[in-house]
Length: 165
Image (cartoon, rainbow, N blue to C red; front, side, top):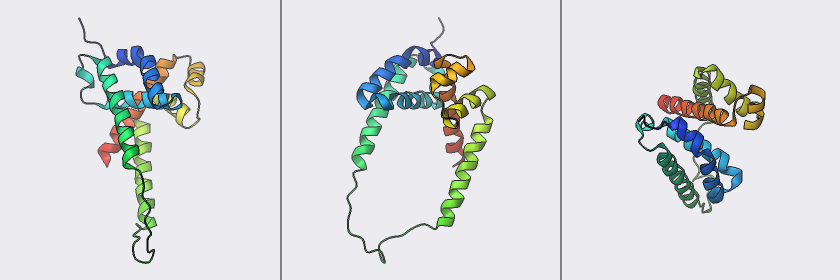
């Protein structure tokens, strides 16, 4: 019997993960969190050899919620008086501009490397700001397929940008 694939788990577990993450993080954030779960899963070195892809996705979702809680706790900012003449160090704006241009180039290169259909779905969502449903209606593909292409695009872009930095 063949092992279940991550793609199969994506299709069968999406609604359950939406509900799980929606109850814990808010329904307005659930779609993005599910997308992040699948992007992390697709980008994992373990993705090709999973015995239990559904359990792997559940673990990633749980870890994502834990990471978000830790981040919120650790980002409680305490404001202290600062002597502006003495205490503040700021990087040169020129350096920021160079870093931003480099990051934009890496991002654009990664997007251009995507397969045509994946790139089209990604750009329709991120640039044209179409919903998954609108993309589904325009392209005649299922919403799950739209989500699959978005997951694939986000994982590829993340890997490409991280590898170059």
